[in-house]
Length: 154
Length: 382
Image (tube, rainbow over all chains, first blue to last red; front, side, top):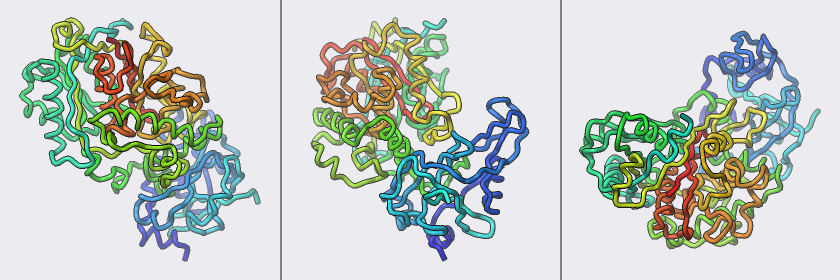
Protein backbone atom coordinates (compact mmCIF):
# COMPACT_ATOMS: atom_id res chain seq x y z
CA UNK A 1 0.00 0.00 0.00
CA UNK A 2 1.49 3.39 -0.94
CA UNK A 3 2.53 5.39 2.06
CA UNK A 4 0.23 8.26 1.19
CA UNK A 5 -2.71 5.88 1.58
CA UNK A 6 -1.50 4.78 4.98
CA UNK A 7 -0.56 8.38 5.69
CA UNK A 8 -3.93 9.94 5.37
CA UNK A 9 -5.35 7.55 7.86
CA UNK A 10 -2.40 6.72 10.08
CA UNK A 11 0.39 9.20 9.45
CA UNK A 12 -1.43 12.47 9.78
CA UNK A 13 -1.50 13.67 6.16
CA UNK A 14 -4.27 16.19 5.72
CA UNK A 15 -7.32 15.41 3.59
CA UNK A 16 -8.87 18.35 1.75
CA UNK A 17 -11.40 20.09 3.98
CA UNK A 18 -13.74 21.16 1.26
CA UNK A 19 -16.73 23.46 0.94
CA UNK A 20 -19.77 23.72 -1.31
CA UNK A 21 -17.81 25.49 -4.04
CA UNK A 22 -14.87 23.10 -4.04
CA UNK A 23 -16.63 19.77 -3.45
CA UNK A 24 -17.34 19.00 -7.14
CA UNK A 25 -13.61 19.24 -7.93
CA UNK A 26 -12.92 16.48 -5.43
CA UNK A 27 -15.95 14.43 -6.50
CA UNK A 28 -14.63 14.39 -10.06
CA UNK A 29 -11.08 13.70 -8.87
CA UNK A 30 -12.37 10.65 -6.98
CA UNK A 31 -13.58 9.37 -10.35
CA UNK A 32 -10.20 10.06 -11.94
CA UNK A 33 -11.30 13.18 -13.77
CA UNK A 34 -9.67 16.61 -13.66
CA UNK A 35 -12.34 19.23 -14.16
CA UNK A 36 -12.20 23.00 -13.71
CA UNK A 37 -15.12 25.25 -12.81
CA UNK A 38 -16.02 27.23 -15.93
CA UNK A 39 -18.54 30.02 -16.39
CA UNK A 40 -21.59 28.91 -18.36
CA UNK A 41 -22.06 32.49 -19.52
CA UNK A 42 -18.72 33.83 -20.72
CA UNK A 43 -16.98 30.40 -20.65
CA UNK A 44 -14.02 31.67 -18.63
CA UNK A 45 -12.49 29.02 -16.37
CA UNK A 46 -11.81 30.08 -12.78
CA UNK A 47 -9.90 28.69 -9.83
CA UNK A 48 -10.30 28.34 -6.91
CA UNK A 49 -14.02 27.67 -7.39
CA UNK A 50 -16.40 30.39 -6.20
CA UNK A 51 -20.11 31.15 -6.38
CA UNK A 52 -20.13 33.48 -9.38
CA UNK A 53 -18.00 34.60 -12.31
CA UNK A 54 -15.76 37.60 -11.52
CA UNK A 55 -15.84 38.62 -15.19
CA UNK A 56 -19.56 38.45 -16.10
CA UNK A 57 -21.16 37.85 -12.66
CA UNK A 58 -23.09 34.80 -13.84
CA UNK A 59 -23.94 32.21 -11.19
CA UNK A 60 -24.26 29.49 -13.84
CA UNK A 61 -21.25 27.25 -14.28
CA UNK A 62 -20.19 23.81 -15.44
CA UNK A 63 -17.21 21.62 -14.69
CA UNK A 64 -15.07 21.49 -17.80
CA UNK A 65 -12.84 18.45 -18.29
CA UNK A 66 -9.21 19.38 -18.99
CA UNK A 67 -6.43 17.34 -20.57
CA UNK A 68 -4.38 16.96 -17.40
CA UNK A 69 -1.26 18.23 -19.16
CA UNK A 70 0.71 21.14 -17.88
CA UNK A 71 4.09 22.47 -16.92
CA UNK A 72 5.85 23.33 -13.68
CA UNK A 73 5.37 27.04 -12.93
CA UNK A 74 7.43 26.83 -9.74
CA UNK A 75 8.23 24.37 -6.95
CA UNK A 76 9.61 24.16 -3.44
CA UNK A 77 11.41 21.42 -1.56
CA UNK A 78 9.98 21.29 1.95
CA UNK A 79 12.18 20.40 4.92
CA UNK A 80 11.26 20.16 8.63
CA UNK A 81 9.87 21.53 10.85
CA UNK A 82 6.65 20.11 9.41
CA UNK A 83 3.57 18.34 10.67
CA UNK A 84 4.61 14.84 11.72
CA UNK A 85 3.12 12.96 8.78
CA UNK A 86 4.81 15.27 6.30
CA UNK A 87 8.13 15.35 8.19
CA UNK A 88 8.41 11.60 7.58
CA UNK A 89 8.20 12.20 3.82
CA UNK A 90 10.62 15.15 3.77
CA UNK A 91 12.37 16.42 1.84
CA UNK A 92 9.54 16.41 -0.70
CA UNK A 93 8.62 18.68 -3.57
CA UNK A 94 5.45 20.73 -3.85
CA UNK A 95 4.94 22.15 -7.32
CA UNK A 96 2.60 24.63 -8.91
CA UNK A 97 1.36 23.19 -12.19
CA UNK A 98 0.04 25.52 -14.88
CA UNK A 99 -2.53 23.72 -17.01
CA UNK A 100 -1.89 23.55 -20.74
CA UNK A 101 -5.52 24.08 -21.70
CA UNK A 102 -6.32 26.63 -18.99
CA UNK A 103 -3.35 29.02 -18.73
CA UNK A 104 -3.38 31.00 -15.50
CA UNK A 105 -4.99 28.12 -13.64
CA UNK A 106 -2.32 26.51 -11.53
CA UNK A 107 -2.79 23.49 -9.30
CA UNK A 108 -0.65 22.73 -6.28
CA UNK A 109 0.53 19.13 -6.23
CA UNK A 110 3.44 16.77 -5.76
CA UNK A 111 5.49 15.56 -8.71
CA UNK A 112 5.88 11.83 -8.10
CA UNK A 113 8.50 9.34 -9.30
CA UNK A 114 5.76 6.95 -10.44
CA UNK A 115 1.99 6.51 -10.17
CA UNK A 116 0.98 5.97 -6.53
CA UNK A 117 4.50 6.78 -5.29
CA UNK A 118 4.58 9.04 -2.22
CA UNK A 119 5.54 12.72 -2.16
CA UNK A 120 9.30 12.90 -1.89
CA UNK A 121 9.80 9.91 -4.20
CA UNK A 122 11.22 11.99 -7.06
CA UNK A 123 14.87 13.08 -7.17
CA UNK A 124 14.64 16.90 -6.81
CA UNK A 125 17.40 17.28 -9.43
CA UNK A 126 14.87 16.18 -12.06
CA UNK A 127 12.61 19.17 -11.35
CA UNK A 128 12.78 22.37 -13.37
CA UNK A 129 10.51 25.30 -14.01
CA UNK A 130 8.86 24.74 -17.37
CA UNK A 131 9.11 20.94 -17.29
CA UNK A 132 6.13 19.16 -18.82
CA UNK A 133 3.94 17.10 -16.51
CA UNK A 134 0.77 15.04 -16.73
CA UNK A 135 -1.83 14.27 -14.09
CA UNK A 136 -2.15 11.03 -12.21
CA UNK A 137 -4.58 10.23 -9.41
CA UNK A 138 -3.42 8.82 -6.11
CA UNK A 139 -6.29 6.99 -4.46
CA UNK A 140 -6.56 7.65 -0.74
CA UNK A 141 -9.93 6.05 -0.02
CA UNK A 142 -13.08 5.04 -1.87
CA UNK A 143 -14.22 8.65 -1.83
CA UNK A 144 -10.95 10.51 -2.17
CA UNK A 145 -8.23 10.64 -4.81
CA UNK A 146 -5.62 13.38 -5.05
CA UNK A 147 -4.65 14.74 -8.46
CA UNK A 148 -0.85 14.37 -8.60
CA UNK A 149 1.75 14.81 -11.33
CA UNK A 150 4.30 12.82 -13.30
CA UNK A 151 7.12 14.19 -15.41
CA UNK A 152 6.72 13.90 -19.17
CA UNK A 153 3.92 14.04 -21.65
CA UNK A 154 3.09 10.40 -22.38
CA UNK B 1 -11.18 65.53 0.08
CA UNK B 2 -8.34 63.40 -1.26
CA UNK B 3 -5.77 65.37 0.72
CA UNK B 4 -7.74 65.37 3.97
CA UNK B 5 -5.47 62.85 5.68
CA UNK B 6 -2.22 64.43 4.53
CA UNK B 7 -0.16 65.50 7.54
CA UNK B 8 -3.41 65.96 9.50
CA UNK B 9 -2.30 63.58 12.26
CA UNK B 10 0.98 62.70 13.90
CA UNK B 11 2.51 59.93 15.96
CA UNK B 12 3.50 61.45 19.29
CA UNK B 13 4.25 58.41 21.40
CA UNK B 14 5.79 54.98 20.91
CA UNK B 15 6.20 52.16 23.39
CA UNK B 16 7.37 48.59 23.48
CA UNK B 17 8.21 45.72 25.79
CA UNK B 18 11.45 43.77 25.67
CA UNK B 19 11.64 41.24 22.83
CA UNK B 20 12.63 37.63 23.46
CA UNK B 21 11.93 34.08 22.38
CA UNK B 22 10.02 33.72 25.62
CA UNK B 23 8.67 36.34 28.04
CA UNK B 24 6.90 35.45 31.29
CA UNK B 25 4.10 38.04 30.97
CA UNK B 26 0.81 37.19 29.26
CA UNK B 27 -0.09 38.76 25.94
CA UNK B 28 -2.61 40.95 27.75
CA UNK B 29 0.01 42.18 30.21
CA UNK B 30 2.46 42.85 27.39
CA UNK B 31 -0.21 44.80 25.51
CA UNK B 32 -0.89 46.97 28.57
CA UNK B 33 2.82 47.58 29.15
CA UNK B 34 3.41 48.65 25.53
CA UNK B 35 0.35 50.93 25.40
CA UNK B 36 1.14 52.59 28.71
CA UNK B 37 4.75 53.09 27.64
CA UNK B 38 3.57 54.77 24.42
CA UNK B 39 1.20 57.07 26.33
CA UNK B 40 3.95 57.93 28.79
CA UNK B 41 6.26 58.70 25.87
CA UNK B 42 3.58 61.01 24.47
CA UNK B 43 2.85 62.63 27.82
CA UNK B 44 -0.84 61.85 27.41
CA UNK B 45 -2.95 60.36 30.21
CA UNK B 46 -4.65 57.00 29.57
CA UNK B 47 -7.99 58.58 30.44
CA UNK B 48 -7.68 60.71 27.29
CA UNK B 49 -7.58 57.70 24.95
CA UNK B 50 -10.81 57.52 22.93
CA UNK B 51 -9.80 55.45 19.88
CA UNK B 52 -8.24 52.01 19.53
CA UNK B 53 -7.04 50.06 16.51
CA UNK B 54 -5.37 46.70 16.17
CA UNK B 55 -5.24 43.51 14.11
CA UNK B 56 -8.04 40.94 13.90
CA UNK B 57 -5.42 38.43 15.11
CA UNK B 58 -4.79 40.46 18.27
CA UNK B 59 -5.91 38.37 21.27
CA UNK B 60 -6.37 41.23 23.75
CA UNK B 61 -9.63 42.88 22.79
CA UNK B 62 -10.67 46.50 23.19
CA UNK B 63 -12.71 45.86 26.34
CA UNK B 64 -9.82 44.15 28.09
CA UNK B 65 -7.25 46.72 27.06
CA UNK B 66 -9.36 49.81 27.76
CA UNK B 67 -10.45 48.76 31.21
CA UNK B 68 -6.95 47.64 32.19
CA UNK B 69 -5.12 50.82 31.20
CA UNK B 70 -7.88 53.15 32.42
CA UNK B 71 -8.88 54.53 29.05
CA UNK B 72 -11.70 57.04 28.81
CA UNK B 73 -14.89 56.55 26.80
CA UNK B 74 -13.89 54.91 23.52
CA UNK B 75 -15.72 56.34 20.51
CA UNK B 76 -13.82 54.60 17.72
CA UNK B 77 -12.42 51.07 17.60
CA UNK B 78 -11.46 49.01 14.59
CA UNK B 79 -9.59 45.87 13.62
CA UNK B 80 -7.76 45.08 10.43
CA UNK B 81 -7.50 41.59 8.97
CA UNK B 82 -4.88 39.51 7.20
CA UNK B 83 -2.19 39.22 9.84
CA UNK B 84 0.87 41.33 9.17
CA UNK B 85 -0.92 43.11 6.32
CA UNK B 86 -2.81 45.15 8.88
CA UNK B 87 0.01 46.91 10.70
CA UNK B 88 0.01 50.27 8.92
CA UNK B 89 -3.75 50.18 8.40
CA UNK B 90 -4.23 50.55 12.16
CA UNK B 91 -2.66 54.00 11.83
CA UNK B 92 -4.77 54.80 8.78
CA UNK B 93 -7.98 53.94 10.65
CA UNK B 94 -7.01 56.07 13.64
CA UNK B 95 -6.09 58.95 11.35
CA UNK B 96 -9.45 58.74 9.60
CA UNK B 97 -11.26 58.74 12.95
CA UNK B 98 -9.31 61.72 14.24
CA UNK B 99 -9.56 63.81 11.06
CA UNK B 100 -13.31 63.22 10.86
CA UNK B 101 -13.89 64.16 14.47
CA UNK B 102 -14.81 60.69 15.72
CA UNK B 103 -11.97 60.67 18.24
CA UNK B 104 -9.02 62.70 19.51
CA UNK B 105 -6.41 60.35 20.96
CA UNK B 106 -5.82 57.06 19.16
CA UNK B 107 -3.77 54.07 20.23
CA UNK B 108 -2.67 51.27 17.92
CA UNK B 109 -0.98 48.17 19.29
CA UNK B 110 0.05 44.57 18.72
CA UNK B 111 0.96 42.05 21.39
CA UNK B 112 2.01 38.56 20.49
CA UNK B 113 3.66 35.55 22.05
CA UNK B 114 4.69 34.02 18.76
CA UNK B 115 8.02 32.95 20.25
CA UNK B 116 6.75 30.78 23.09
CA UNK B 117 3.30 30.06 21.68
CA UNK B 118 2.30 27.46 19.07
CA UNK B 119 3.14 27.91 15.41
CA UNK B 120 -0.10 28.91 13.70
CA UNK B 121 0.40 26.52 10.77
CA UNK B 122 0.36 23.57 13.17
CA UNK B 123 -3.28 24.29 13.94
CA UNK B 124 -5.81 21.72 12.81
CA UNK B 125 -8.46 24.26 11.89
CA UNK B 126 -8.36 24.82 8.13
CA UNK B 127 -10.30 27.33 6.10
CA UNK B 128 -11.54 25.51 2.97
CA UNK B 129 -10.14 28.20 0.69
CA UNK B 130 -7.29 28.10 0.09
CA UNK B 131 -6.26 25.26 2.43
CA UNK B 132 -8.03 22.47 0.50
CA UNK B 133 -5.93 23.33 -2.56
CA UNK B 134 -2.58 23.43 -0.76
CA UNK B 135 -2.33 21.68 2.58
CA UNK B 136 -3.07 18.09 1.50
CA UNK B 137 0.06 18.33 -0.67
CA UNK B 138 2.27 19.47 2.18
CA UNK B 139 2.31 23.16 1.31
CA UNK B 140 1.77 23.83 4.99
CA UNK B 141 3.59 26.93 6.17
CA UNK B 142 3.76 30.56 5.13
CA UNK B 143 7.40 29.95 4.18
CA UNK B 144 6.33 27.26 1.69
CA UNK B 145 3.77 29.57 0.14
CA UNK B 146 6.29 32.38 -0.31
CA UNK B 147 9.12 30.04 -1.41
CA UNK B 148 6.94 29.05 -4.38
CA UNK B 149 6.78 32.68 -5.51
CA UNK B 150 10.45 33.25 -4.62
CA UNK B 151 11.73 30.47 -6.88
CA UNK B 152 9.66 31.77 -9.77
CA UNK B 153 10.85 35.32 -9.11
CA UNK B 154 14.54 34.36 -9.01
CA UNK B 155 14.12 32.23 -12.14
CA UNK B 156 12.21 34.89 -14.05
CA UNK B 157 14.47 37.83 -13.25
CA UNK B 158 17.87 36.26 -12.76
CA UNK B 159 18.12 36.68 -9.00
CA UNK B 160 20.14 34.39 -6.76
CA UNK B 161 20.37 33.36 -3.12
CA UNK B 162 23.16 35.93 -2.82
CA UNK B 163 20.51 38.61 -3.24
CA UNK B 164 18.32 37.14 -0.53
CA UNK B 165 21.44 36.93 1.62
CA UNK B 166 21.99 40.67 1.10
CA UNK B 167 18.60 41.28 2.69
CA UNK B 168 19.31 39.02 5.65
CA UNK B 169 22.73 40.60 6.23
CA UNK B 170 21.38 44.17 6.06
CA UNK B 171 18.77 43.43 8.71
CA UNK B 172 21.24 41.59 10.88
CA UNK B 173 23.87 44.34 10.73
CA UNK B 174 21.25 46.87 11.79
CA UNK B 175 20.14 44.59 14.62
CA UNK B 176 23.75 44.32 15.77
CA UNK B 177 23.57 48.07 16.55
CA UNK B 178 20.23 47.85 18.37
CA UNK B 179 20.38 46.64 22.00
CA UNK B 180 16.62 45.95 21.91
CA UNK B 181 17.00 43.50 19.02
CA UNK B 182 16.82 39.78 19.69
CA UNK B 183 19.89 39.35 17.44
CA UNK B 184 21.88 42.26 18.93
CA UNK B 185 24.77 40.01 19.96
CA UNK B 186 24.53 37.58 17.03
CA UNK B 187 26.44 38.57 13.89
CA UNK B 188 25.61 36.77 10.64
CA UNK B 189 28.06 36.08 7.81
CA UNK B 190 27.48 35.28 4.16
CA UNK B 191 29.19 31.93 4.72
CA UNK B 192 26.81 31.06 7.57
CA UNK B 193 23.82 32.08 5.47
CA UNK B 194 24.88 29.92 2.52
CA UNK B 195 25.58 26.94 4.80
CA UNK B 196 22.31 27.19 6.76
CA UNK B 197 19.76 24.41 6.73
CA UNK B 198 16.92 24.53 4.28
CA UNK B 199 13.40 25.26 5.42
CA UNK B 200 11.63 25.37 2.07
CA UNK B 201 14.00 25.47 -0.90
CA UNK B 202 14.99 27.97 -2.19
CA UNK B 203 14.60 29.52 1.28
CA UNK B 204 16.87 28.66 4.20
CA UNK B 205 16.69 29.34 7.93
CA UNK B 206 17.96 32.93 7.60
CA UNK B 207 15.34 33.83 5.00
CA UNK B 208 12.76 33.47 7.78
CA UNK B 209 11.78 36.02 10.40
CA UNK B 210 12.26 35.46 14.10
CA UNK B 211 9.72 33.91 16.46
CA UNK B 212 9.25 36.51 19.15
CA UNK B 213 7.33 37.38 22.31
CA UNK B 214 6.71 41.11 22.63
CA UNK B 215 4.35 44.01 22.20
CA UNK B 216 4.43 47.50 20.72
CA UNK B 217 2.11 50.50 20.57
CA UNK B 218 1.95 54.03 19.31
CA UNK B 219 -0.20 57.09 19.95
CA UNK B 220 -1.74 59.21 17.21
CA UNK B 221 -3.31 62.68 17.63
CA UNK B 222 -4.15 65.63 15.40
CA UNK B 223 -1.20 67.61 14.02
CA UNK B 224 -2.46 70.59 16.01
CA UNK B 225 -2.44 68.68 19.28
CA UNK B 226 0.93 67.14 18.37
CA UNK B 227 2.64 70.53 18.52
CA UNK B 228 2.11 70.53 22.28
CA UNK B 229 3.57 67.07 22.86
CA UNK B 230 7.07 66.45 24.19
CA UNK B 231 8.59 64.83 21.08
CA UNK B 232 9.03 66.05 17.53
CA UNK B 233 5.75 65.06 15.83
CA UNK B 234 6.03 62.40 13.15
CA UNK B 235 3.31 63.20 10.66
CA UNK B 236 1.24 60.63 8.83
CA UNK B 237 1.73 62.01 5.36
CA UNK B 238 -0.03 59.36 3.33
CA UNK B 239 -1.69 56.03 4.04
CA UNK B 240 -3.04 53.18 1.95
CA UNK B 241 -4.74 49.82 2.21
CA UNK B 242 -4.60 47.36 -0.67
CA UNK B 243 -6.59 44.31 -1.70
CA UNK B 244 -5.87 44.05 -5.45
CA UNK B 245 -8.35 42.75 -7.99
CA UNK B 246 -8.24 38.94 -8.22
CA UNK B 247 -5.74 38.69 -5.37
CA UNK B 248 -5.59 35.37 -3.49
CA UNK B 249 -3.62 36.11 -0.31
CA UNK B 250 -0.30 34.39 0.40
CA UNK B 251 -1.12 31.76 -2.22
CA UNK B 252 -1.55 34.32 -4.97
CA UNK B 253 -1.21 31.62 -7.58
CA UNK B 254 -4.30 32.11 -9.70
CA UNK B 255 -4.10 35.38 -11.58
CA UNK B 256 -2.21 36.65 -14.60
CA UNK B 257 0.87 37.68 -12.64
CA UNK B 258 1.25 36.17 -9.18
CA UNK B 259 4.46 38.13 -8.63
CA UNK B 260 2.56 41.43 -8.69
CA UNK B 261 1.47 41.57 -5.08
CA UNK B 262 -0.61 44.01 -3.05
CA UNK B 263 2.34 46.39 -2.65
CA UNK B 264 1.74 47.63 -6.19
CA UNK B 265 -1.83 48.60 -5.34
CA UNK B 266 -0.83 50.16 -2.02
CA UNK B 267 1.91 52.14 -3.75
CA UNK B 268 -0.44 53.66 -6.32
CA UNK B 269 -2.72 54.94 -3.56
CA UNK B 270 0.18 56.05 -1.38
CA UNK B 271 2.01 58.08 -4.03
CA UNK B 272 -1.20 59.51 -5.45
CA UNK B 273 -1.82 61.43 -2.25
CA UNK B 274 1.80 62.23 -1.36
CA UNK B 275 3.83 65.38 -2.01
CA UNK B 276 6.95 63.36 -2.76
CA UNK B 277 7.97 60.17 -4.52
CA UNK B 278 10.16 57.08 -3.98
CA UNK B 279 13.35 58.99 -4.80
CA UNK B 280 12.65 61.31 -1.86
CA UNK B 281 12.35 58.54 0.74
CA UNK B 282 15.28 58.75 3.16
CA UNK B 283 14.76 55.43 4.92
CA UNK B 284 12.30 52.54 4.64
CA UNK B 285 10.91 49.92 6.99
CA UNK B 286 9.72 47.10 4.74
CA UNK B 287 7.82 44.09 6.02
CA UNK B 288 10.21 41.17 6.10
CA UNK B 289 8.58 37.99 7.32
CA UNK B 290 10.71 36.42 4.56
CA UNK B 291 13.67 37.91 2.65
CA UNK B 292 12.03 37.74 -0.83
CA UNK B 293 9.36 40.19 0.34
CA UNK B 294 11.98 42.95 0.30
CA UNK B 295 12.90 42.83 -3.43
CA UNK B 296 9.23 42.30 -4.30
CA UNK B 297 8.28 45.35 -2.22
CA UNK B 298 11.12 47.50 -3.56
CA UNK B 299 9.60 46.97 -7.00
CA UNK B 300 6.02 47.39 -5.86
CA UNK B 301 6.65 50.69 -4.08
CA UNK B 302 8.59 52.04 -7.04
CA UNK B 303 12.19 52.13 -5.81
CA UNK B 304 13.22 50.22 -8.92
CA UNK B 305 11.67 48.72 -12.02
CA UNK B 306 10.04 45.35 -12.34
CA UNK B 307 12.59 42.58 -11.97
CA UNK B 308 15.30 44.86 -10.56
CA UNK B 309 14.53 44.29 -6.87
CA UNK B 310 17.12 41.57 -6.40
CA UNK B 311 19.90 43.58 -8.06
CA UNK B 312 18.86 46.63 -6.00
CA UNK B 313 20.16 44.83 -2.88
CA UNK B 314 23.75 44.74 -4.22
CA UNK B 315 26.61 46.91 -2.92
CA UNK B 316 25.07 47.07 0.56
CA UNK B 317 22.32 49.31 -0.81
CA UNK B 318 19.95 48.35 2.01
CA UNK B 319 22.42 49.10 4.78
CA UNK B 320 23.16 52.29 6.66
CA UNK B 321 25.05 54.52 4.22
CA UNK B 322 23.56 52.69 1.25
CA UNK B 323 21.12 53.81 -1.42
CA UNK B 324 18.04 53.03 0.69
CA UNK B 325 18.66 51.91 4.28
CA UNK B 326 15.96 49.38 5.15
CA UNK B 327 14.77 47.96 8.46
CA UNK B 328 17.21 49.96 10.51
CA UNK B 329 16.26 48.33 13.82
CA UNK B 330 16.78 44.85 12.37
CA UNK B 331 13.22 44.27 11.14
CA UNK B 332 11.28 41.06 11.55
CA UNK B 333 14.32 39.10 10.43
CA UNK B 334 16.63 40.24 13.22
CA UNK B 335 14.99 42.63 15.73
CA UNK B 336 11.62 41.04 16.51
CA UNK B 337 8.69 39.59 14.62
CA UNK B 338 5.58 41.21 16.03
CA UNK B 339 3.51 41.36 12.85
CA UNK B 340 5.50 44.33 11.63
CA UNK B 341 4.62 46.79 14.38
CA UNK B 342 8.30 47.23 15.26
CA UNK B 343 8.75 48.69 11.77
CA UNK B 344 6.32 51.49 12.66
CA UNK B 345 8.11 52.38 15.89
CA UNK B 346 11.47 52.35 14.12
CA UNK B 347 10.12 54.67 11.45
CA UNK B 348 9.17 57.09 14.22
CA UNK B 349 12.61 56.85 15.81
CA UNK B 350 14.29 57.61 12.49
CA UNK B 351 12.28 60.81 12.07
CA UNK B 352 12.94 61.76 15.69
CA UNK B 353 16.65 61.18 15.05
CA UNK B 354 16.93 58.53 17.76
CA UNK B 355 17.51 55.28 15.87
CA UNK B 356 20.50 53.12 16.76
CA UNK B 357 21.20 53.04 13.01
CA UNK B 358 20.27 56.64 12.36
CA UNK B 359 20.12 57.88 8.78
CA UNK B 360 21.57 61.39 9.10
CA UNK B 361 18.88 64.03 8.72
CA UNK B 362 16.12 61.59 7.80
CA UNK B 363 12.90 63.48 7.05
CA UNK B 364 10.80 60.87 5.24
CA UNK B 365 10.17 57.20 5.91
CA UNK B 366 8.10 54.54 4.18
CA UNK B 367 6.66 51.84 6.43
CA UNK B 368 4.98 48.83 4.84
CA UNK B 369 2.87 45.96 6.09
CA UNK B 370 3.01 42.38 4.87
CA UNK B 371 3.48 41.96 1.13
CA UNK B 372 1.74 38.86 -0.21
CA UNK B 373 -1.41 39.42 1.84
CA UNK B 374 -3.95 42.25 1.67
CA UNK B 375 -1.69 44.98 2.91
CA UNK B 376 -1.22 48.57 4.00
CA UNK B 377 1.51 51.20 4.10
CA UNK B 378 2.20 54.68 5.41
CA UNK B 379 4.53 57.50 4.55
CA UNK B 380 5.86 59.29 7.62
CA UNK B 381 7.29 62.80 7.55
CA UNK B 382 8.86 64.88 10.28
